[in-house]
Image 1 (cartoon, helix red, strand yellow):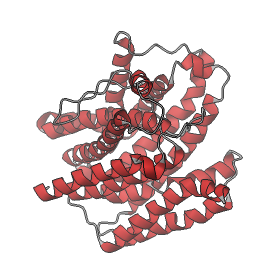
Image 2 (tube, one colour):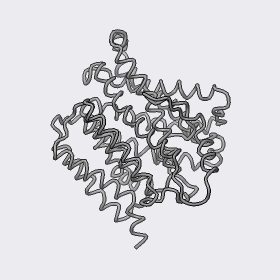
Image 3 (cartoon, helix red, strand yellow):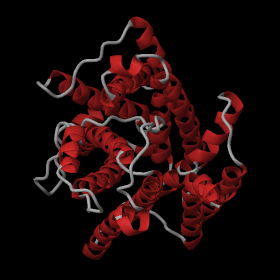
Image 4 (cartoon, one colour):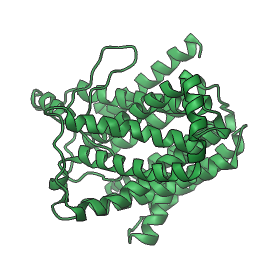
Length: 386
């Protein structure tokens, strides 16, 4: 990537973060309701995370750090620099995960390589990190689950494994930017599955917002120079698994007393990570187990495979934790803008770094699709005000 492109990307990231947090436009300091979305699988207590090229560290206990920061603020509108840092790290984590994930897949052979093995080992890296957090003093309490409680977590773990594996397959089969555009259409899958199987109600406004979402994906597909059906289908599968995971996660947390026995959302994330690794490991052994020796040979002779695999696993764990903590600390509109800005940064930034095509038709589809997702997330609030 040229210096000019790198500079432009940094300005894009900084601008998006400021847009998401600007109090005048979005009132991000507005009080939040006590209920929070459980569709995002992540925790709020963060492990030490060192950002590339800097000495910045994220506290072991993000909740305590945030409370201390908010406690020192006087009443009134004050810019939250701690929250700004979490936004920036969330964006960077997602951005670097997509880059290191693609580089690991490419170095291991691309479409003829070992996508299931890499997806599984990424979760394995996250599991090691989760176990270290439980073992490190004064970091995270162990959950106190019963056998019945643990059985209820398996559905979330299985669907999380499916979502992660399908995402890795999609990003391996085609351009990362295209895979991210298709994954942005997750609300369409969530709405359909929620109505069909979980008794949810979706407003007419939201149904109408799905038209530009689906239309944007179609346009992006037509504008993708390296279009691959495998990338489209596996990204759609990832959306299906993610939608089911969100609903199952919501059901899980409605179990009486489970939240207390779990010991926090950080523990919930860690348990799901461990379950997901177990499910992915079974699939890996069935599909690529006979080739594991070949993978080890490639990994031992190609340092880029191991380095990017480990880094992508760490980035995956870290950005998910940062995402949920950040979204919980902001209001709904700010979260929607933040998610939209994040997708734009990842799609454009990764396309620049990986030298992927960004044709006008693909960019138009991207803009329409992501705009539809943003409108979908706020349309009910807009209609209520009227």
